[in-house]
Image (cartoon, rainbow, N blue to C red):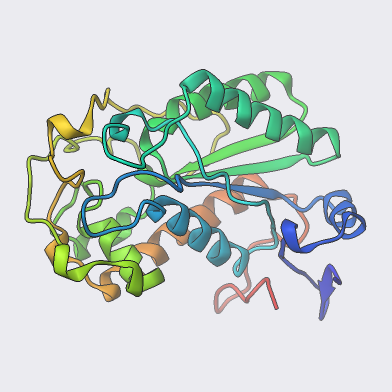
Length: 280
């Protein structure tokens, strides 16, 4: 794998590299992106348990097309206690999940990584992640930031009837239609249900500062609010809306990464005409 193509630094998937190539990428100062998305969490009767994992991986790929990053393998488990009463849904304790993220980040830092971004799709995973960010920021050994999905992509809100983007609702279902339409059970779309997520997105989008402490209310058990494990109106979902939401989220992530990692190779502001692809 060549890190440079036509004079530009190239993104790479860590799992596809040899250790020699991985060392070269890390030594070059390439930021490491760690996507985090539950591979086993209920998303209503119409979306697969891997919904968060699919979205996290899809976002990471799209970010890698815009800026040169080293994308780590997906972390498929988080702190998701609200859905464990739904069959198949799994959750790590907050302490275990925080320890996992702490050790993953420490491992990359020990190998020379100086810039790490955690791309997180799980709302209840935000607090453990932010706690780890605070520790790493205090240590000062690397610049580590988090992109929490619940705060990103506000520019696409006008496309959605459900402005709160309820779990497995219009927003997530639209993103899945855009990323993997065959996985969406269109014949099982739930009607609108009680929505306890209103008001959660209280902070501005982006990740301009490290260790931004996000606010999120206690979630409780999801089945107390929705017997299907879905919130919002998934019947409004379309692939076109999903593309708009994904584009807006990626725009926010890329803008945040350019700010946080301005000195990283290949992270200079894009020339007039927009970003060019960072991956072959």
